Length: 463
Image 1 (cartoon, rainbow, N blue to C red):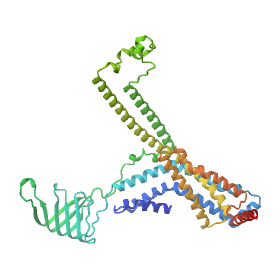
Image 2: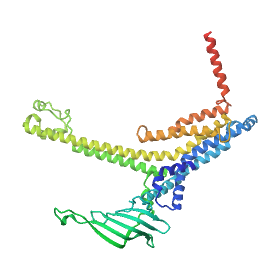
Image 3: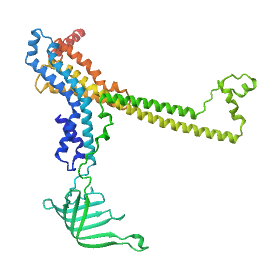
Image 4: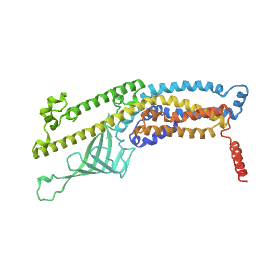
């Protein structure tokens, strides 16, 4: 959890720095972020602890003593298996009810921090531009006394043209409620451009004004964090439990069906589709061989192209071309809308499956870690950490690959979200079987003898 939280801080450090945030705000953000990181940390913790526990039992010959007493590996694993099953159900409860609240809280705090302006902090020789309409630079400053020396201010708030203010000295003062900052200037000059429309073909200069004392008031609204209404984020799929996701999926599915049906109906109503099997041609009308159908009532309204003037013929072709282009545009935009709605639907389906994948992943990684520890017979923090890291990287890469394929619409959501479980479950069964039968899967001597026999056999065949 420590390393994952540090990774979060490094990722968002640019958004958090320079805002003058209180320690309580940062701790609250990290608290809710840590809750959202549990689905990533918990499978690794189960994998590492199971490898380390059974590795210690095997390294100290306790597992051998238990098997000698007639206890099978499955019976030895039973207490931990019960604990892991309880942990899996707890993980489901966490992801379904607690994780949505944590996501809601940390997203709300994070967006409030983004809306907070950087702390008012002047640096010597650098223009400060975070106050709307002002660029401020000072040559020297005294933080203890709040005094400034060599002040240069570009003011863009008075008119379309900028105003330049220079002052020898100044002092920063805050209002009682901290809503305003007053900059008291002394011994300065103001350069202001004269309105150009008052003169014609005359050089326009700056107007220069001197002052002994002057005060500029800055509005400090936005420099302190303002908590927004959390209801703005409650409709996001990450903030829903699986019952809410099922309801949202049902609503989205019915909405998509309704919109598709409405578009299809409107498209059919706007198009005239003629089927030559039911619409008689001119020679059929003359011979009287036309089929008797319901469409004969509309035959009198048909106009055949060979009976109209060339100009009318060209105009008809132009109208038909315009209609076809309009229909193509409608179909193109409808395709974009369908893709967008399908992407949104996949996001909700992905969130629904994530409610269950964590619980199942804990079980799968336990059945990988426990037999693996019994096979490698190494406890402590050395070999177990190496093997746990390798298998967790495989699990994490498969999970990310599955989610990326779902986002790219290469596979359906349930296949992408369960991809890692589908691949690692047979591996867990295989390792459990090997450990139950005391297989020397990672014994180097076994592989040396095996390769030695193959080498001798190939050498004898050559002779």
